[in-house]
Image (cartoon, rainbow, N blue to C red; front, top):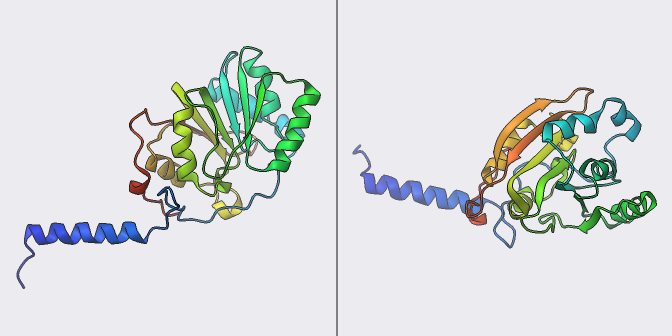
Length: 236
């Protein structure tokens, strides 16, 4: 049997690549569906606030993330506002907290809590499964806390979120190291999905108190985002 000519081999590789790309389910904007289960949104809280305070969850996360007064931050998937009401004093009156969620009833409850506590530096935002609807070039940090596994369209959300960071901004994710259907995200899968959209992992460590891990990512620079149609989903 004669070996394939280089031109024929190249054509076969291109054809195979195109066939694989065409087999990927994509939304109207061209973003691929995640090739893994997506956990159902079942509650506005991950665990009781008393339990989380006892293990100093936010203190650990804020320290690792370098949260300071005057910063502008976003809590994506804010739920009942556990992080929002703690980020508000952490960034202070010169800072701003965007509390984002896709669930109207969660936002209604959070709006009442913010008003009751008179948190003047909090802005509520209703996003969608593929777009957090946050202002452009505004964020020093964005938090995805125990909810990444619930994002129906992570590639689209991460792609659209990238433009909301200031230069030097960071994405902070906490989750449990377990399968998405069990309400967690294995670190290797998280790293793969974020890398597919151009994010680079800067650090990752296990938090104490059984609250999982924290991973910090650098978003892609302007002009370095991949085209939606070129993003291939990670197998998870």
